[in-house]
Amino acid sequence: MNLTLFDLDNTLLACDSDYEWGQFLVDRGVLGRAEYEAQNAAFYEQYKAGTLDIHEFLGFALRPLAEHAPEDLERWHAEFMAARIRPAISAAARALARRHLDAGDLCAVVTATNSFVTGPIAREFGVPHLVATEPERVAGRFTGRVAGIPCFREGKIRRVDAWLASQGRVMRDFSQSSFYSDSHNDLPLLELVTHPVAVDPDPKLAAVARARGWPAVSLRFP
Image (cartoon, rainbow, N blue to C red; front, side):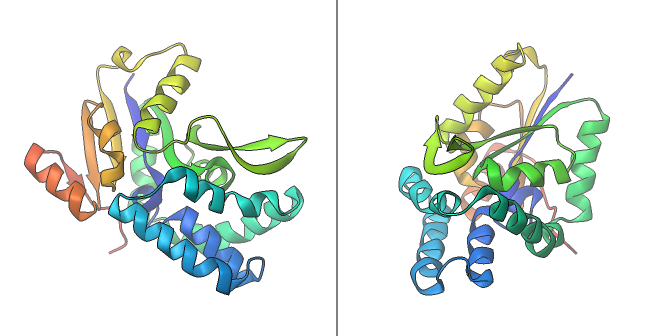
């Protein structure tokens, strides 16, 4: 059995689900445009530049989950899937996930975006495992805080290791391990697997992939 890991935002998806979730809530009137939109965009630019303080960002991104009832969040997320996420999934992305699943690989989506946003998206691809940043819940409601280590940069390795341990496995059990990602923020995990793949990579990752001879693919729409 091989191990296959997929980044989500701008990899399997032709968008960033964390950013789009915030914008969806703004457009729906759940969040105020004036106080949220500019900050959401600023954090996204910091992520792309590699300067994001993940804890500062999560304090911002998880706050709307704590401010609203779970049933409202679930209803809005169903609308979000239809309006923002399914249109951002290409046939090539679906085919890539299906190819590895059909081959019998142990597959997981590994993403910094929180599991409330990304759980239904992983299920949309048929990927059975999700390794994501976990928002804390108390008595069935989100608190706005993070539970455990954010699944970001080196944190992705720690979270993947913990997930594999829950399966009774370690990374070296697999003769081939793959990770598909678009972002230089994922270099720690890309450097750990035996088969790193740059997917529609950002400029920094594209340069690293060229220098190291890593394969590069595109999953975007024609």
